[in-house]
Image (tube, rainbow, N blue to C red; front, side):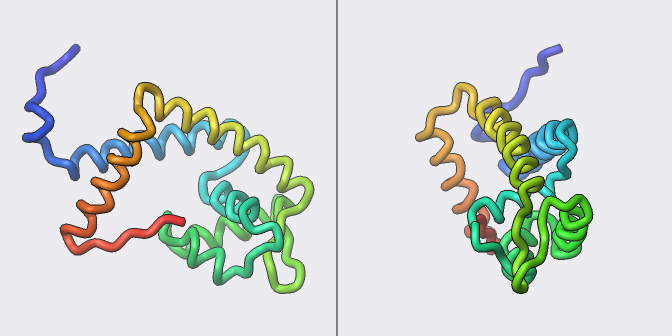
Length: 147
């Protein structure tokens, strides 16, 4: 059933950003779960892919904590340690060979999801959307940062 909606200029951006976030989050969590990775575990593995020398806990939490809260990231670190995907060496979190392999599987899922989300959306449209959302956040006194 298709329902008629108001023209886009009369619709609230907050409604659409929340709905988009919910839909993307559900889809991402579901697909990552298919390969045995929780989304916060993905954030930890992904950060380690960007920092081959590893990260200390505080830097990891400061970087990905805003995604879901520091406690969630601490749980993800503990989980990844328990699964032997990461280890602590020299005061830094580093991934193991098992973790590297799990990252590669999850990274493939993330590439598929990005392609799915970007269907019919040009790079210019995508960039404009991100910039508009960033400006909207600033306009209402918010503060957001993403690595």
